[in-house]
Length: 184
Image (cartoon, rainbow, N blue to C red; front, side, top):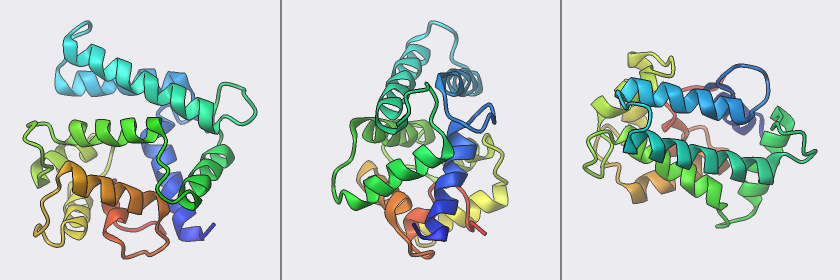
């Protein structure tokens, strides 16, 4: 696997999946993420939004664990994570259900207005909550929207998503959908 691609994958692993920074992805990471997302959005425990978020992310965890947890220890290691995405890149158009579910969840999470597009303010609001600077978010958004000339719809986001996880081209627009502009 190209070093650049591995760095991108490890960035997503550590920022968006290994929430408790244990070095592995486990169910607890998803439970913490659910709490954080719901708290950030102001969704009360037991609300429809909280339940939907919980159900979706726990389904993502189950799918991820089934596919990537090769040694069946209840955790996805960095090695297992990278191997799963290597298999994804080689599979052509074969996207696993959990991957589609997570991609769609992230689109909806960022599209906080629910208007079917991701705008700059929404992007900044969500990604700064993950510790990414506002300036970095602005630069990343500009890169994957070609200076805001591309409207980010679910279809565009799907293309960018695939590009992020499979491209080895450092200039591919999809590389920037997680708010980062370099992976050095």
